[in-house]
Image 1 (cartoon, rainbow, N blue to C red):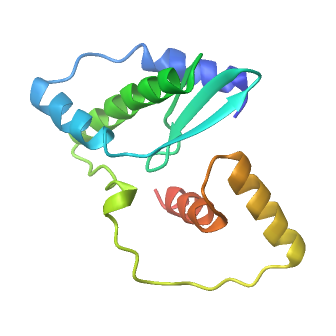
Image 2 (cartoon, helix red, strand yellow; image 1 turned 180 degrees about the horizontal axis):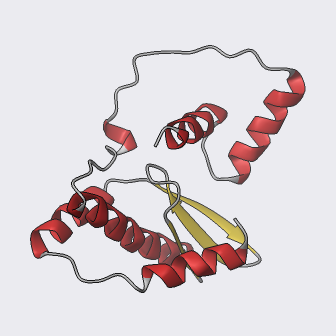
Image 3 (cartoon, rainbow, N blue to C red; image 1 turned 45 degrees about the horizontal axis):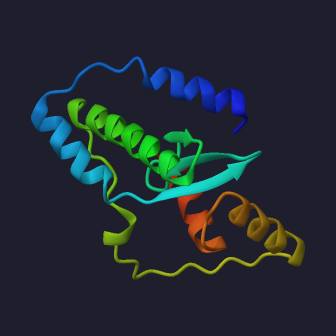
Length: 137
């Protein structure tokens, strides 16, 4: 995502309205359990949610980016709750019991590993899973 897109996403978050206290409390509790993926570009930190990969935050430090991202995650979860939708479960609570094997060329594997690392994922499997799950929403 370009710096311009990130700025526009952040600007749109500032337009959010207040939420009912019970909705906000539920959203904060869930958002605190979500994982934040960080990256640093040109000395500025950017964060995004692992469970809600289209939710972003930023800051001058890693801590500020995490705080900003958690605020954005809280707003996103509160919006989902208000709309009667079920927010995704935190990644740490999901038991993964199924395995899928995918054959890749050496070039494809290198490309996926490189992109996963650049986007802050701990490994190619997490990256592929996040992209696939997001595509189903």
